Image 1 (cartoon, protein in one colour):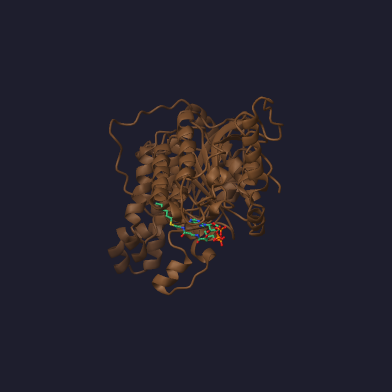
Image 2: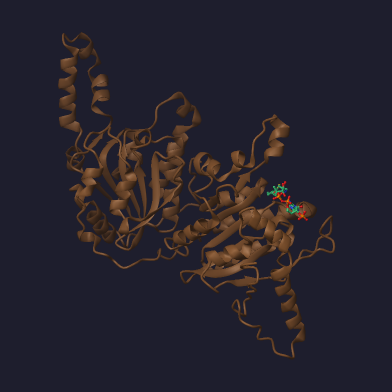
Length: 536
Ligand code: HXC
């Protein structure tokens, strides 16, 4: 079976003949046993895995990592448990392949659950191997990637299995903000096990084969009588579009694992190191006239903010997070002049780009990630406000908006705000305004920064005049014109120091490259305290 014959150990690259000396027969015998286990052990299970449209754990590792870079840890490990199906059945690896390898030559730690061994279920030995990988990742300051494909807690190992999960969660929290954590769900991930991907910085899923839920369809049917399929309950699109647990969704494992490699190319190894830089490509002198064509002058005409991202990013490329969830805000990692930055942008083509609860949470988590790992933030603002409504208020939009506010206020990385078209009210303040600590605020000449739009403002300020006017329509038009002239332009904010500069839209990429260069050495120690109390 492809990939299955790769026996890789710490001392020997894949494919190389064992250099075992003739006087070490025991070692030779052990290695042969291991090779036999990996190559032939579970052919039926491997075929079944393939028939489900899934790759095996070793095939996945081969796609994820650079060729022959994988160093396997504890391949001999076996469970010491008893119970139905376990007694006398102690396969090597205990259902998880653990170790380290490289992606584009950069070290990562990795574990891949092997569904062909006890359904990838997690027992004490299996968990101990994962604990070791997480401990090594933290100690060595390298990203950790989990390939999940598991039936959950190994039922026969009872509370020891649950204990193993607790140890994973505790280490993931310890690793949070220290090394990037990526979770790739490539099969079932049920029950409390789903908290592992939820604790990661990035979670990938694949349509039709990945599923994640706290209680499966059987329990849902028993408790509520509601019949639901695995895919409807916890498939990739459920988490990619509704719950927000999945950061990225793919159609197949190959493209998913290739995308994980791309993501890693944008991430620093740990919080102390910079993200990998590529060569400067002269962005400081770039002139992009198309930007003014993408963004319509009329304040309410929709457009796709992704086109702005593409115009500003090196080679037009960016890695978008949560593409199908909270689509009214966009978050992406990209490079400007070779340096990694995080883009947050309102999306005028979805709900006019208003901020609501999920959008606030999506952006807040991204801002916190970038801040934790020293990635500068560029906020591209075109926002009419927060979404009004009973549902929003009941759903906690105040709390969720406060999460975004808290995240920005706390961020000490270089921060640049660009106001493209409109920035009204609280949403203007929250989208990294000068008042909450942006380092550089840039505005396009045509934009509108104000407490609210002209119509709304005139209604509030001149209600009585309008009610008694002989020609209310004419008066309204006159007042709207006056308000627009006086307040709806960046000049008012620029004269008061709230906007650093008014720029030609075509110069935006150049201005960002220059601003990022200016802020390159920004250091801002956090205040002395244990930690803040973000309004989660
Ligand atoms: C022990 C397990 C297992 C488990 C699967 N297997 N899950 N063994 N403990 N949790 C074994 C099966 O017995 C089978 O062994 C092999 O793995 C393949 O499983 P199948 O059922 O044949 O595969 P499939 O039909 O694809 O179904 C996959 C599945 C199903 C949907 C995951 O196996 C299943 O429902 N498993 C139980 C899921 C579950 O309830 N887990 C506990 C969740 S609670 P053989 O020998 O026949 O090949 C939890 C708590 C975590 O995880 C708490 C954290 C705090």
